[in-house]
Image 1 (spheres, rainbow, N blue to C red):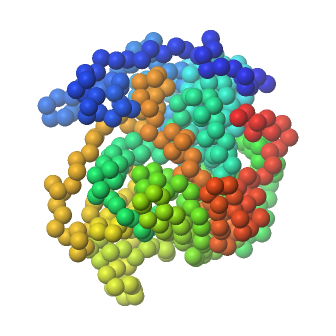
Image 2: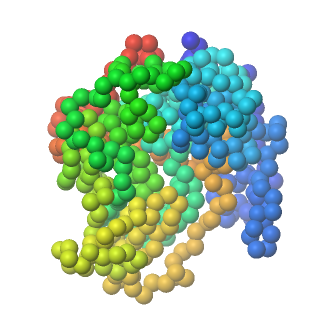
Image 3: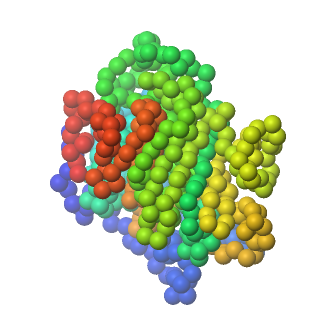
Length: 492
């Protein structure tokens, strides 16, 4: 197999994209650098789009898509909808699947593959960028190979299944210099710009506590938590490439509870509710409060803990040390339908359980949409997930603050997918590149280890090791790759 390990980014297989200019100096003063050269939609006086952003066919990015059903299929649709992508290849281990068939039907002229290695061997020179919408544990081999071949990469969240895989992708991004974007799509809209502006203008400051939560029902809720072994082998669907599905992970028999989104349930293959939703809830405060990696991770409560799949509910504490002038921060994560955190009494727009005992000034919601509460020295904020913005909770210090008193922030017309397409053409910088999204994903990996081990963990931020538990420290790296897959871990 050709890996292109020694290829330079300027080789003849790469297209030489021309950067678009023509933006006035005045515009450069007000518009963030990553969008200085992006093409805009044309809108009427009322703000309605009358002409979408158009990219000439000669400027389009030749896109190969790995994982084309379920979430992977949605990513393809969104990337293609930018008008900036030619879908030239579709790769999935189950091309016969109903949802895969939808992607194949939408792009009938795209080459078809079940093995991404063969796709790159045959089409390396025809591909500019790659989308990766496969299960968490299989992101790494596809991504690192694509980067080593000089291809830009869009990878669904969380970035990797293990801490070490994200560490390798941080190094790969520096080495190969390609555009990289993790698919936490809200990180490119109002949530991003508002949080950035409010931190820079001192509205969000001296944060000491944050609660983050996602309390919706998960696939594994209702499973037998006394399960001792993986489910027994079942018949493999026709034409399903099970060996490639397993990637570098240990071999075992097929079962339908490992595919079609069910992979997220298992420690071995997914990152649970934390990895799934944390990327949409924690991204703003993780980046702009410069949290980095925690020094301690503590499982406060795990309901239905077992050795195979994620608990039915989890409460995890992450302790972050001082960063410059910013104080220590405790972030507490809640998941599970019966594990809803208390919120300040003026939270608003919730049904309150008046029978619950709570701390002074707090109430117990009966239900709560995914989001967070951020407790600063002077002000307390509530926010949702994805692109949803923050608001000030009217506590004693915040009761007189009005919307007009708060700083304005830049509002972009470029969504997460267009941001990646433009970055692939040298027109913008990605807003969730691996230098930003990999440490966020590593935070989730540390949390999932605490869920699996069910013991407090101490983490050395300098050496990036777990210092109080050898088994947990070994989980930073995960299982040794299967024979024939070792080379992917040596491409950096």
